[in-house]
Length: 117
Length: 111
Image (tube, each protein chain N blue to C red):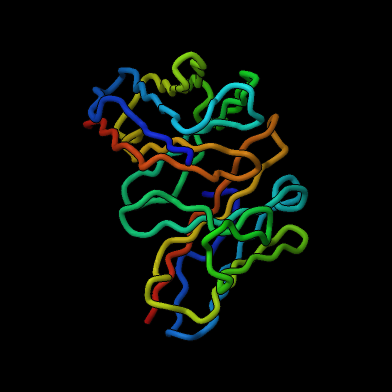
C-alpha cells in the first residue's frame, strides 16, 4: 500500500523560504508514469493546487505561484520536495502531497505551515 | 475565485438523493476527466470518483459521477449522516502548458 508523508518546519518567518518534503513508501517514484504533486488548503478554505513533477522531471506549476515555487525529486531517497520562497501570512495553510495518474489517488495526511503576520 | 464552479453548500435529509454540480470550460472539463474528492472534517481529501464516473475500491455505489460537455455532477443517493463532508471536483486544464484545477468545494449538510 502506497503511503505519502509530508515533513518540514511548522513555522516559517515572513520573507523566508518554506521547504517541505514528501516521503513515499510502498512504491517507487522513479520509473512510474505518475505525477507527484503538492496542494495546500488555507484554514477554513478550499484546496489549491501548487504544482506537480512528472516522473521524467518535467514540472507544472500554478501560474499564480510559479515565480516562487520549485518542486524537485530525489529518486535515491524516494522523496519529492516543495520550496516556496518569499512567504507571507497568506501562505499559511495545510500542505498536502499526493500521487497523480489522471487523478490524485494517494494523499499524505497533510502538514500545517504557519507564517506569522 | 476557482476555475471550476461548485455551489458552496448543499443539504438533504437521510435517504434522499443529493446532486452537486461542477461547471468548467472547454479547456478543462470539456476535454479532460473530472474527479471528485471527499474531505471529512479534519482529514485529508479522499478520492471518491475518478475519470468522470469510476469508483475506487471501497467507495459505495451510492456515489456516482457524470459529465456532459463542460459540466459534471456528483450524485449521492440514500444519503447518510456520515456523508456530511466537503466535496471537491477537479480536472486537468490544457491551458497555460497544463495544470490542475479544483472547484471551490461544496459543504454537504445532512439535516
